[in-house]
Image (cartoon, rainbow, N blue to C red):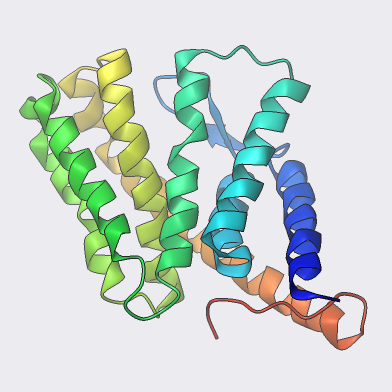
Length: 221
């Protein structure tokens, strides 16, 4: 199978698996009617296997098609929800190779600035500084799967949080109350992403060894 054909094959495969995973709810986003799903574990790792471009294309396709199939209204929240995971995909992919993708670190930095620029955000600057500095720190340990996953999920959190405060004007007390929720949630997300990566990696390797699927390179050993 030629390289481009192989990429298209795995793009289709990951898109299908992503669509299936997005049907399985995990929990609800506080302050909205949006549910997290197992797709939030699966989506970031697409960048490791497909690369940033194909990974983002796969994830965005899943999100858009899912909204269309469910006839979900294109509300402000729904539109905002499309983008954070794409940055998580890129973070996961960009940290795969030495010296590449450092621009992704600008995203959490910009998110911190945007959050604190909001009147309510200025009352709780420690919320953004505490959480959205994590991708910057995790980048230094990008060969560690769990820390890579933690940086990825907090990059998504940064993008979503910076947009959410401006669109919905959540009060400072809400953000303060979210701190223990975010800690527990994102630690679990990072674990879920790590476990999902390992499962997908070994499954693909096994199927490739049995000549059921072509061999696919991945980002981590």
